[in-house]
Length: 135
Ligand code: SF4
Image 1 (cartoon, helix red, strand yellow):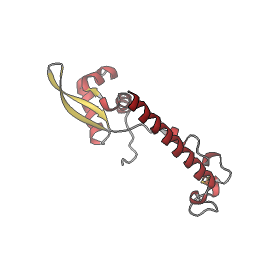
Image 2 (cartoon, rainbow, N blue to C red):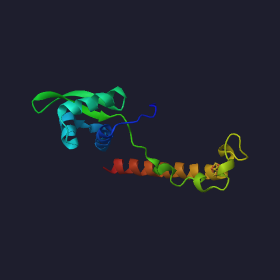
Image 3 (cartoon, rainbow, N blue to C red):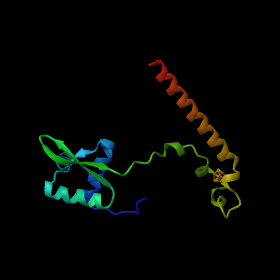
């Protein structure tokens, strides 16, 4: 787990581009090109990001020479799973928690929401298995 890290503008842009390219990442020359910077400045950015644990640099032979592929170690959060959670609109939200009058461990709304999620996930997995079997 990383502590909050404040990045410079260039490092932030580099990380956003790498995030867009997921697990495949980008060759460092591709990243420098997209950022419009020299390889010298680019190397500084990559080293800074690697030192902070935000990027992995992997040696790779490409275009007839050894270079580095940069892969983001940061993942985008998918918050869609909590989109329909009852808590944000709950009138008891302010008094719900360990020291409050209400508790998620005894809440029927949360229980019902979690059951719906579990059923929906099970249906999705069943459909995936059936599709795979037909293929
Ligand atoms: S856990 Fe239940 S009571 Fe607590 S905020 Fe969520 S919906 Fe409301």
